[in-house]
Length: 62
Image 1 (cartoon, rainbow, N blue to C red):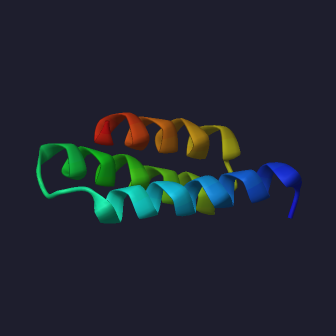
Image 2 (image 1 turned 90 degrees about the vertical axis):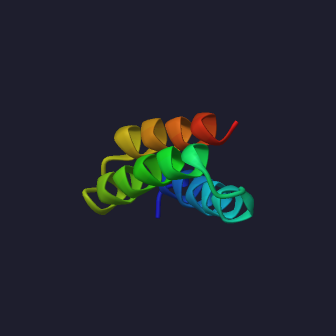
């Protein structure tokens, strides 16, 4: 894995942990949609899109 891929993988773990701890509600639902989009982008090896969606998921939980 490249350093960029490692960073993305760590970010995904971090966002997943934050999502797991979040209370149920519209913020969590919105974050889930972004996280799922990030997983899809990650599968396609699109780091830029993955990070964009992870940032959106983090923002949705805030």
